[in-house]
Image (tube, rainbow, N blue to C red):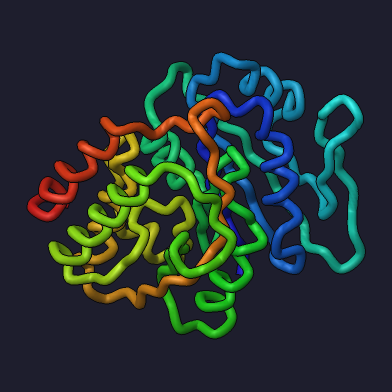
Length: 258
């Protein structure tokens, strides 16, 4: 089953190359396409993508790496499946949710996973998620959870409390137990992607997609522990307290009109 990797990116010049390498090398025996959506970056991310993909989408081979100057290199590994990388561009910054919308409209794989470009998440964690959907075929949707005892960088207490409160209220309102609704790692089948319609352009898309999935009442939803190497604001973290307040509003809004 082909895996589509969705990577929205905004001002991640220092990590985008390493993120693409990590995404390309994970699950080496699974054919992958990577949809990268630059959301109007102004720090050189856009220029780096255009330099590395001057001719547009690229079937990159099965071995993707970084050269001495930080450029992508492509080759082949025996037994590994091909990786295709497709860069897309927003003319101006529209928000992470907008980047997800653009990418989800372009995917062609049987299974889709959302991946950030900031190295907070480890693509090696896809293996156990993918197994539940594509190998054991017991799940249609798999959420990662940063609260299941895997390596998890200890950061801000107020982030932890807000995340727990949002996840608790989501479980209460939607009758679907999830411990980490705001997690980046959401993996789901093509059928699920065909039946969700994301309109939220900011971080609220996390609530909207979760609401639409839960309210369908027909998909098998699993959670699995993942690693988390969180960044501080000084390192480039973008979500803030305003996004947390919006999330509580979105919990109500999307319960009424998902």
